[in-house]
Amino acid sequence: MEKRIRWIWLISLVAALAAIGAQGYWLYNQLRYESSMLAEEIAAEVRLAGEEEFRIRKEEAQMTKATYVIERNATYSSEELVDKIKNSFGLRIEPKGTTDLRAFRINLDANLPEDSLFAGVDHALVQYLNPFETARLDSILSIRLVEMRHEIRPFMEQDTLDNRLIPVWRSLSDNPLSPSIAVSYLFAPIDRKGVWVDVALPLHPVLSRMGGQLFLSLFLILLLLTCLGLQIRTIWEQMRLNDLREGFVHTMIHELKRPVQTLKMFVSFLNDKEMRTDEAATEQILQDSMFELDNLSAYLGKLKDMIDVDGQATLLKPSSFNLQALVEKVVRLTTVPTGKEVTFSTAFPSDMPDITVDPVHLANVLSNLIENAIKYSGPKVAIRIVVLWNGQQLECTVSDNGFGIAPEEQTKVFEKFYRSSHLPDKQIPGIGLGLSYVRQIIEAHHGSVFLTSVLGKGTCITINLPL
Image 1 (tube, one colour):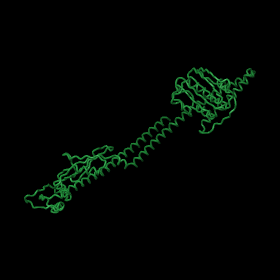
Image 2 (spheres, one colour):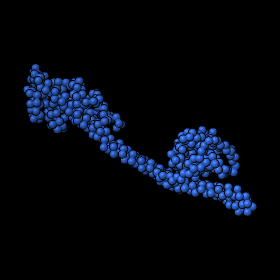
Image 3 (cartoon, helix red, strand yellow):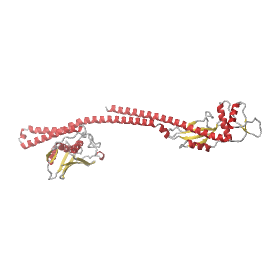
């Protein structure tokens, strides 16, 4: 059984970890995807900033008052291209050989599309007339990329682009939690002149986009862990209940031995004709037999009460009796286990009147406390019972010199089925119902129970009953 449960735990744990791992992997890829989408948007903003920077420089270049000569390479002689450049800048195109004019020369690749050639020449001419300044682009980026750190750096010789006429972006960090990208801006693409704009991507926009996915994933993970925890707890409780059931049978046998053996002894006495001639002894034996039968009946009732649903009222049958006589009878009928030496000492107020409570339940309470003191002590047990009365309230204290109870367990020992984990002998019989029963009976009488204990020195339990 335990081996099968261990396998269930192991398989459940592996399945849960695998599910959490798969969910984490999906979230990681989703984070990378969202970061990539944000990078595309930032790159688009950088490109728009570059276009704005180029537009401003071009407007300034168009105001230049000068005459230029455009010398065309024989491999590419498109008049349409020349007309576009002429119309774009309002230039006057002079024939080659004209004197006293400034010449603008550029090497073109005839294999490039005409639109790319025009854009390249357009940028080159603007760069010639009005050179690029980093400060201008930086000021435009500061407006467009609000609350984003950026840095502008020039192209290096080792930088390569698939198409030098088209701006690109690339990732600078593989860590999705601190992403950054570099976006190219070509202010003179034909001459391969440009800069890199490094931008640190903020994480909160990415997480905001993934808000629903993150919430759902965390909810599912917590739900899975909760179900796993409940499963393990349920299995653990089932194992604990199984142990309790086994212990319950053994404890019942042990607990019922005492009254049965006592009654057997009484029957043996009554079976002896010579002993029956002693009327006083016979009368005492009959009273003790009835007392023991009442205790046995109350013990079985105690088990029923403790197993029933919480909240049901305990049925009490109060009657008036002498407490000292009851305590002395419980002490006299206490069975001392073989191998233990038990001594009792008692103290009672001399002027205490009869009390009115349930005598059977109170006798069982005292019997439980005394039996606990004997069970959870060493070979030599000293038990002291002290009764005090102030006219309105009864106080009964049962103390011993036993093993004691750890401080962290002193509030738990009154719970049903709780047994201390610090017992020196794990074979001591019991199912953890004794003190729970004591508290239930005393509270049913509107009283209270207090416990003080020191490990290795003993335990003192005080019962207060209003009278």
